[in-house]
Image (tube, rainbow, N blue to C red; front, top):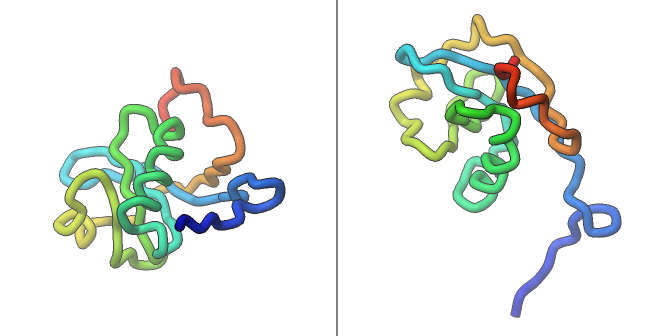
Length: 110
């Protein structure tokens, strides 16, 4: 028997606002988005990565938590060796409201 969770008012997904930006690790630019630790697992994390893809066209995306010094991550690639190398000093954080349309994909992200 399947159980369905309430998805917010009138069956909609809850409003989700995240912060993220572009970082460079080992010479590769990636999108780093701070998410709730509950989202850093298969299923939930994959769904969130899919929702974020239009916001970061042509960039790999890594979900991370906590914001201050990320110690957990989830992505479509192996994050174990990259996570300790994250340098957030130069990252400019931006608000990502997943209920709004993503920016024009012709423009580079941020």
